[in-house]
Image 1: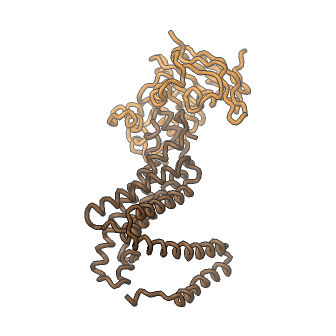
Image 2: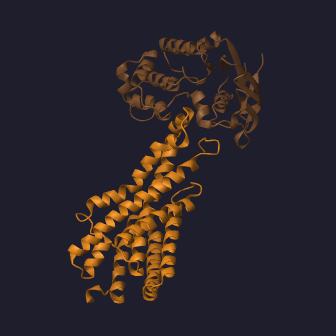
Image 3: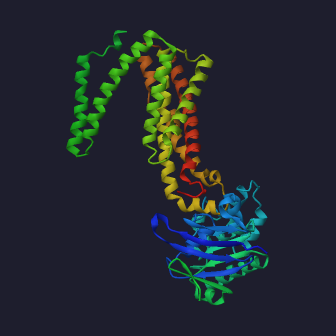
Length: 214
Length: 252
């Protein structure tokens, strides 16, 4: 099986300020990795590089053996889905957000599928028409997550998505992600959460822009 | 046509109006005196020059000369729209293309329909009207785009991350920018006659034309400006939004 990602000497130093320094990393298919490290160590930057929202200033990243730069971006980003820390929901209602993944695939909005997705994160069907401004932080985070999962990606990049969620909701999100992982999804999750770190199967620590090998 | 004569003496007295504006400015410390003086001087010089130029162009009535005059108007309009683009790359050629297409297409339709004759006395002023309205619309649309791409940066990033192409990620912003650009034209179309008696119509009435005839021209102008500002804003916005991204389809 080919590796999902292979990073070779990847650096990111916009304007000469090094955020990531010569990262070598191989992520196997169906990995479930937890990435941790102090604030400002470059964890989010690493995820954004993998999501092609940033481009390495040097080094190469391959995805399924293909150089990332050679793959068409919208198609790539539909497969490698990045979920933001403190996501912003757009439009007016929850439905506007859940309709977007359909719209960009030129598909009609599937209401039943959206309702099932809401249910998977314990949000009531009535929330579909809720105004995004009326949602709590935790609700927004869950809507953003299912927005990424409505069309199952191959890789999910999670940037501290459980920050600020209560214990029950956290557990719910973990179960959802684990189910997707069991179905073949590769998951890289950045976190500061002690319980998530303790429960991690594979833990990667980034410190000062470098991968720490313990 | 004696009712159309403004004598140089009358104009000199009209300077009193400028002095009133200047006085208010100085008294209230608004700080626009310099701009106001520059504006007045430029208006006098530019209009004097254009008055003589137009007299000549109308007298010789040559196609190439009329064309050149229209080209100069388009160039200046694009230059001005470009100033309001505040850093959008390639805004000048985009503006020139947008204003040029809007003006030439609208003119062609009007001439084709027989509403205008292809003579310098009609083509040059109407081109100026269309180009200046398109210029204002495009300038507003640029400003709206700049503001939105800054304020909605996170939302655009999220759309990109979900796999939207540049058009899909920018669609909401582009629509809003076009709306903003067209708003003044639509507003003035709504209030024309009840608030403003616009220049074209007022000019004709001044010149002694029957107001019922003058309004026919104004209706034509209203239609023409609606068409021109929408064509101009759409072209400018659709050519400008990709400039907010780099070659890797990331926000700049």
